[in-house]
Image 1: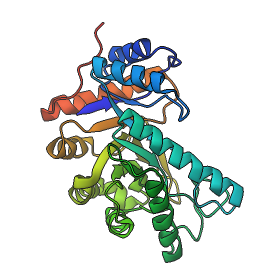
Image 2: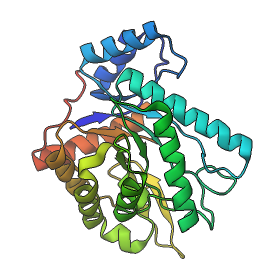
Image 3: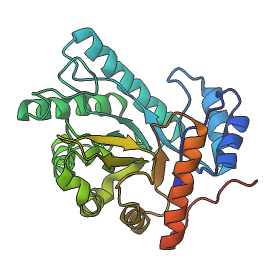
Length: 283
């Protein structure tokens, strides 16, 4: 599979930027270009990615298309359309956002987030984004989340069927699905269920970890891969069985050293399971 993650060298020249990925042992990247990038810049970026053997995994559209603030909602919709257009231009595997929140925190919980009414809002909003771009090379996806749809493999399938667009794909972050002790201790089964159901639609995945604490009531925290309870053996085996070329993208860490720690752990699990993964950087 293609392990990837962010690099901490500012993007200026694509060759130097991709050399940083090679030094980190990454063969998948987050797209650093802005939607207003020139055709020349897009072409140079894509040529450098191909030369480096790095796949462009994701273009982020992070925003709240369900915001109760009308101006924020319109800005979010514009951002999603522009990001999806950029993903199409660079040939990214997907453009990804969350479905959005009915509350003031763009990625936060709200009593209305998991209602049938909001489900229909997500369907109509996603259709509008895809129809505005009509992509042929890429897909629009929604990241799995604990308190908004899609919050389970089944709710993701329900969205796929309801949205009914060829260019709507799936994105998997299993940590974001773990919202209870029941899911925490059975996360291997959850991962298998998600990949079995979403496999034909899956475009990219996120890699992190989650830790259940022992003080009441329930406390779950994101942690560096290998420092929590995520069943990485199952995660990597199922992804490899599905698509050996699938991007697995590290995220949400503060510095290069923690990314190196997380990448080393994932490589160690892959080696133990006999799963081919990116070579580590040359020293």
